[in-house]
Amino acid sequence: MHTKKRLSVVLLAICLSSGSASLIAADAKKGDPKMAEAQAMITAAEEARKKAASVDSEWRDTGKFIKKAQDALKAGKTDDAIRLAKVAEDQGNLAYEQGFSQKELKLPSYFKVKASAPSPVSAAMSMKAHKITPALTSVEVMHKGEMVSISRTADENAVIPKAYASTARECPPFCVQPMAIGPGVDTIGELEVLDYLERIAKGDPTVLVVDSRTSDWMVRGTVPGSVNIPWNRINIDLQGTFGSQAEVDSLDEILQNQFHARKTNGEWDFRNAKTLVLFCNGIWCPQSTANIRTLTKLGYPAYKLKWYRGGMQSWVSAGLTTVNN
Image (cartoon, rainbow, N blue to C red):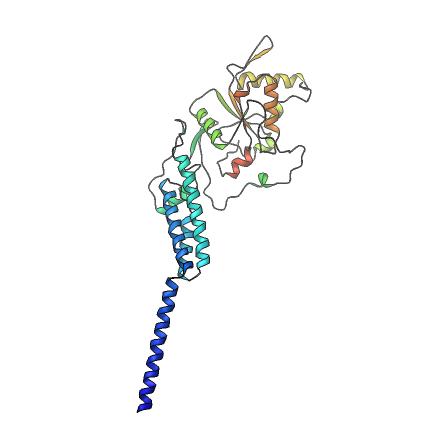
């Protein structure tokens, strides 16, 4: 009898001890500084995500990283939770800075921004993820008399076309071009090219976007709204002369009929000439730069010459629309 009582007391003590140990362990877990840090990081990441969303610039993966961080915390993997939450927070802050800096960006009045129709959240997020800028979804331009919408591809499997994917290009002739091609000639990027294309689409006769590449490259596609004038039709040799009279006549025709320059008593008058935006294959392509040098030697005003240095390689790398010429 006494033995049974004694045994019961011992068992009760063990149970109480075990319960206390569990409570102590739980309390210790709650007070784990790593757990607290992880939770604080997740909260900060969520706040950063909301800030990015407030300027319509939330990145698609930010929410996924926050969810993964929450799952890792529940599983007791505090280091993973902290790491994932940090990635999400950095994404949110960067997206907010990007969106905020462009939120008040005043696009030219002729830029038509297509508003997205009401759609499910997933579709809306897809549209957000593939805009040209946070404030610009697409741009309407004219190409050979037809309206073409320039936007960025939403195809998750899209890659840079093979023609522009190679990095092994011999120099010469495929030498890296400088950032500035000449005094007074502006080097521009994709948004500025879109600006000029939209001006043309709106009927501005003072601008022309010129694809300087030859026909073997044109079959791979071009920038919608551009006009193809192969570089070898606007070129002089190293001595500053032409190889034949036919070349002189060809250039005269281009300058007068396409660029709207005038020739009086053998002298060129560029006062009413168009502003030209020239491009070729990319920063390793010398074709458009050769044309710009030729034009400046002939007296074409530098301020009327714009050089899209990135060319087709940058255009397709950004996932922008191309057309077959």
